[in-house]
Image (cartoon, rainbow, N blue to C red; front, top):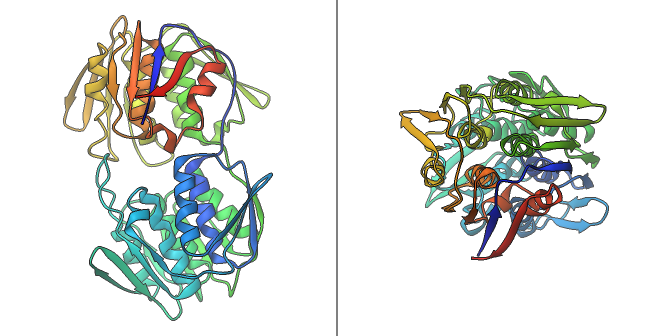
Length: 415
């Protein structure tokens, strides 16, 4: 197990490229189950979660070839079961449920289990599939689903779940008739999946809005597709520039996917300018500002911890309210070890800016909490040691390499 050792207090300067979005790549790779043709994906990030989904699909008989892009072929499926020892490490594994039922008429998928940042129930996935004609049962920790033929349905999601929308959308591409998903998630990653499926011959309209229409087809073909940039990684590096008082140029970044993030960072004092195909980020001061996490297009919960790190050095008091996950303040105690002034009040954190943070040994609890501690360490006086960095490897490709390229003093060493 490794840790990151950071000597903080150095403004970051230079240029950085954003990797492909993990949360777009995962469902797109899984969507390969819907066709027996080869699919080729470009800009796939090299992350722990990507390796996990590949292992899961390989267990089902899916072939992978590495080259200029990631080539995927599901023509020789040998099973319909996603076992616990693979699913338990990543909740996104539940995404195989819809495609397996649609393609094979049967799926047996382990329940994902607990999550460090709160409950993420899959009942909406199951309810929607049942409306499409699937017979679903739960037995000894496994979801078993069967359907001779899925049929189009009018589905309303009680909450706009991203993986639920993606699961049902993939299943609907091979169902008979038209499926309508109402109160659908609107995230760019959902829209990217729909664009990929349409290239395979699906007929999907409305992705990116709260109502998605899918006309089922008899089969899909293969395609080539480029994964969209990771908006959360981009937002994290924007904060890295701001929290250190640096100047960073970000390449391969789509500001159209980040409006709520950019608006709040500008409120917090960051200068963010689009210059051609690059984005310039700078901060001379940090202003305390309130933020509330909401489903897209609101401020994303995946940026809450990083924004809190920035607010720790704000010029006043900020209130950060978490509306998505109930346990997503576990980084607070670690930030306080570094000198932050934060008090939890129910679903809100009251952050009073301090003049400086101080390096300390800290423990990461989840992916985005890890990022917030790295950001705090970059700004802190002295040395910060971040433990459990395997969380970071789930969502940030070579973070220490990218930060060193901007002048950070950061090193990965055995813990």
